[in-house]
Image (cartoon, rainbow over all chains, first blue to last red; front, side):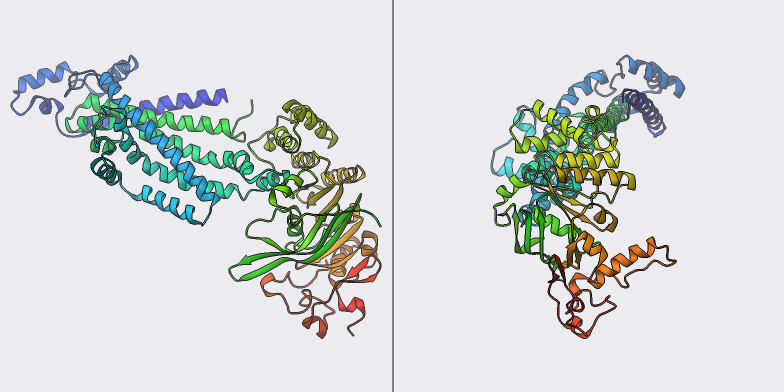
Amino acid sequence: MKKSLIHRLVQAVIVLIGVVLLIFVMLRIVPGNPIETMMGEHADAATVARMTAEMGLDQPLHIQFFRYISSAFRGDFGTSYSLGKPVSQLIGSAFVNTLILALFAALFAWVAGIGCGILSAVHKNRLPDRLFMGFSILGISLPVFMAAMFLQYIFGFCLHWLPISGTERWTGFILPSIALGWNSAGQVAQMTRTALLETLQEDYIDTARAKGRSPSGVLVHHALRNAMLPVLTMMTIQFSGLLSGAVITETVFSINGVGRLMVQAISGRDIPLLQGTALLATAVVIFGSLLADVLYSVLDPRVRKEG
Amino acid sequence: MNEMTLEVSGLTVCYPTEKGAIFPVKDVSLKVPAGSIVGIVGESGCGKSMTARAVMGLLRSPGKVTAGKVFLCGREITALPEKERRKLRGNEMSMIFQEPMTSLNPVMKVGKQVEEAIRLHTDCSREEAKRRTLELFREVEIPEAETRLSCYPHQLSGGLRQRVMIAMAMVCRPRLLIADEPTTALDVTVEAQILKLLEHLRDAGTSVLMISHNLGVIARVCDEVYVMYAGRVVEQASTERLFEQPLHPYSRGLFRSVRSLREGCETLETIPGVVPNLLRLPQGCSFSLRCPECGEKCEKTMPELLETEPGHAVRCFRAEGGEE
């Protein structure tokens, strides 16, 4: 167990470095000079050349890469061209907002998704099932910006219950979290329902009933733990997706998160900032799936390796 | 007359399907005297497992008991509210299943699964339940019982898992144990050990209703046998009597196919045809389509289950001597 975990960790770091290399190379292949963009149209050639040298952009690619990697290990991800601040500081403050948003969205998705999934499975093919599954299909198929605008219109504009945008107060996170979590909630609900219905057909469910367990006891003690295994994997991966920045949601609700920072970086040709946000997204996804594997092996003894 | 642990009379199970209702169990009556092992034998789909599930009250939806009564130690239990029946399950009556591989919860330690059964029916402490579980494991002859308590099902062999199932079924010393093909998934040596264990339980006061399609198993442990075909009991006799003198053409067919093996014949005797579709049963005797002795009357009317002599009943016009 410990051995395979270390193995997986090393793997994760290697993948991460590979992805950084890919991002690094791609950003330098794309046409357009970041210095020219930064200095504006009227910069003279000499200044551009001086700036390029100052930032080390005249060096060969591999030298640039190793410089980047070695300073990244020291926690230095460069300075944003457009905002003039260290990338780590910019991402750090944006990540707090993204983290809060992701946590709220995940909380909504899991509570609503698992709840609806269980109720649907228990009342299979009856009214609650039809209702919840209708909602979940709506959640999966409705684009985030549509959901966001509906929510803003109903709860912000018509009812005045919640702020339409901004995160000055914590209530500002409620609507964006629902808009963002809606899709995940739909997926979780569908998967919970399917997995639970499948599990309820298993032989050990009969055994539990033959022991004299009540229907709710069977559900909680025997069916759910088995049914939640695949759902859990999905939720962990979803959460890492939420954490890597919700571009549309953050834009619609004007939240200063990682997603918005990334959009800013792209439009401003801000290479260090873009590298930083891409690196964060990659790291979150890689460690998210690692976490999913670890959790799975904790919950399912069949996956655990002997010794 | 001996005291009856289980008495089933006129049990009928109905499953509504899209093409109409089917009756996997139709008018089944049987008795399990205290201190005996009674067998139900028949092909797959003849309704033997369904009978067992109906007795336990474990029919899967949308199956329903539509007629008949089940008496456990003289007490009618089909009319009891579900909550009351639940108290009986795992307590006065318990059941073990065909597939020990899939009948245990894969994410729960086997010891815990047995403890759960104990704690459901008694209010003993966790430690007490654990101690009882260990005792039960030793009783069902699980080697190294103490270390096995904290094993997960996938770490045990099929035979050991079935022993765990039996231990779980025995926690409250039930009056009745229903064993649904308990040895089908196991190899022969393990089968012999499990059967021995069941006999041991019978001697300790638990009556057993044994369901099997294996005549060898039935011959070894059962005192009484019911032969089922297409949801009905077609013959009932003591094991000895049935093996010596089967009366129903279906039972005879079953024994012929075994005997042909034993006597070293070149060809394996079989019963021609297949089990009829429960949606399209013949108008008369269910076996008429495959019966070598089928007469005109057999095609039109269903024979009754009648005693030809005390303790031996058969559902066939031929055996009654009514059909030329």
